[in-house]
Image (cartoon, rainbow, N blue to C red):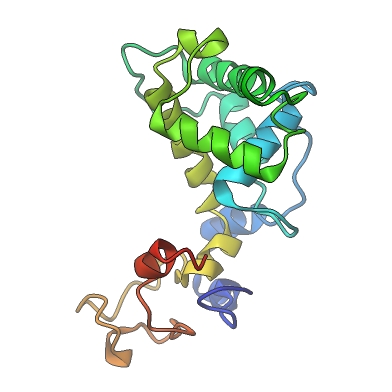
Length: 213
């Protein structure tokens, strides 16, 4: 209940969902179980990476590490693989190893997870730019590795009702459907009855560009 839609709760529309949809979505609110794919040695780096790229620096957190872990453990991958990249499961293990190596070699930290937030953000910035090399990075196309990881991270984050609340998403439209088909005009007449007006009408992209988020 923070951000642009502080009073919005998508779960208020749960009665409009069919039973199969309720089962799937509400399961995402259950306390996550232990990791099954990543090892106890890899877990701190995984959590630190997910927290850093999503700016989740306090509870409650959307359980993205558990979402990533579940997909990798069950083999629920994207259905394609870059020709110059290893299997996504191997990519994730190499990335976590490489993040720890970078934290140590470039910043003198014991590990990525033990680094301060500023250092983690600097490493993540270099990662997204493809400006990392040496060690485990040499076994990866670094920019593609960023794409592989972020697809899974963002998929986990934006499949969770808490993230829907943050962006004002109305949740599953089946079998309810949509009434307003005129596009996002900002006009109340263009909003669905279950949608709410944002606390501000500012363009969120411009807010981010000004460094206010």
